[in-house]
Length: 632
Image (tube, rainbow, N blue to C red):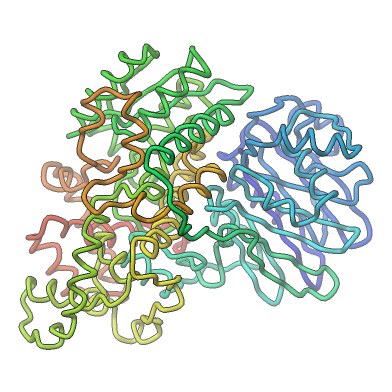
């Protein structure tokens, strides 16, 4: 788990201050070590940095003012092989292949044995060296073999190629900026903005999807010419021709037609979850399990005890989370594991509110509780935390999923939508409901964000006219069933939203979140199960519940689904300083001439619906995002 950065200047050598400043911008991702590699198309040199360990500084000169056309930067958070042998950028034995890698590969020991049988030898116990050898042996076919989370850059001087790759479901972020001057990439956008080729400009198409989905749909971001490398894909740059090719190395399996009993499916899922947990517990630093009190994380804790009897668990307590905290404590006592509760007070939640919001590089509709969870883990010296994230998407966990069958029936009456002429809020909601022709629309409606008509009235006309409001480019297979919905959940709810925010939250405090429910084998198996086994339309997570029955107490199994997030509406209603904070930022936003001030005032002064506060918070976080990344 680390941070990577780099650039390839197509036409000229540029100053190394670019890579040094890019690397410094993501120092939080890896405070344990840093390194650089520069190449001017003739000569390649490795450098240490100001934050490198003393041994690395003795091995490589500290980077000062150099020039090059290609530069790689690296920040290290030491998890596996804590020695300097895990230092990056890492070079092959002949120094012709260079890698920077952010993430963890859980099957690296198996791959290492396979490579050793082919004659490879290893100097370290790191997974990075295994990826490097695997690439030497299998080339880009390596990515399909990796089980874990990764963002990788490889410079291959033999074939004169530069390669960027990202894991199957995008657990590790990788952003890039592409222009006539060159290609720039990094683990976070804030690093890209330190490069001389990158000038921040608003991408209104990205903002549009952000307002509709609570997240910007990949590959777009809210910045012009900055993209997210899509999950399960790699980009190859020819160093001679500058041609760039993007390819997928994996696609989500479709359900099989063969029959299988629920009992058999539960048995195999049970085994696959255990296998994933055992692999993800491996680290050379302390590991903990974060328990929210629900089924997902509690099942992980119960199984982790089998592989590590000294496993630690903890729960974050915040307003209205009493039932979850109680259930987490009951479960921890039931398993006999060490457990602590970290209570986050109102004051603590609001203490670094502006800084935390701006850390996320795009507008958002919540106060992220995972930042507090990461800070607590950091304070307790837990560098690795196992999370239940991914289970909701993989096992049909969201309550709105249960509305799918009703919607599939109701969409037959969509012809009624144009017949609604009244303009009141209820009529607009009904009209919006009857506008959902595709599974994509159904997915969008359930993200509890702004509606398309609301965005259209909000954004000034001259800006709105530049937006591509037709989002058909984001449509997937559009199978009119749970399988079609599942694709959107995995790509846009999980990859574009949850794991992206998880990573930024955790790495703000140099902590690694791991996801046992997102192993290759578990995703492949569950995705290929017949639909009637995975989704019954009556109960969320039916298969995972069956799997958990023999492990969890009744109170956890029967607890209704609830999101793991701070109650923003509670703060808006009960904290004057939050309301003042909102008004202050809305007033600044109205002066920018992006949005219609009258619409902002209407939304703020007439909050009637249960989730009307979401739109307000999206506007506040837009203003804070703009302040951070566009104002000098």
